Image (cartoon, rainbow, N blue to C red; front, side, top):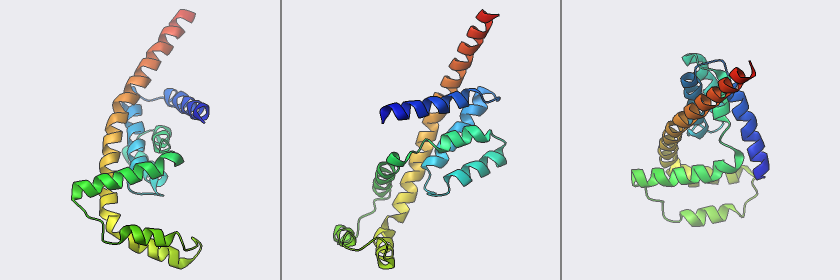
Length: 168
């Protein structure tokens, strides 16, 4: 699994390095994609990233690379932690019987409409903590992604220039 992640990251970084734009714009596009990836707008990450890339005139490939850093095995832990953080920031309390309601859901088949209705009702008190926590998390992660991407793209381009000069 780790080797697959490394290979995937290597391919993404190779694509990021071959974008014909300044390192700052490439890093900004990547960071925007990262923001979209961790935003509260589940299911709309790609559409949102592409719309913002077009609106801001940023490289769509770099934005999409950022959007796709939120991998499937990261989503549940990230949004759980973000919701908990949002609840702390908002001083939100879980309604009484919350755990019992979630446990009762385990008894229902997920294919039943009643399951989804009850799940929505159980999670409704967490909607604002989810939105606030994941928005704060998205901003923080994007702010971290920008200087990291900028340093990576700048250093790799310098290295490529040095190698290119030695060959000629």
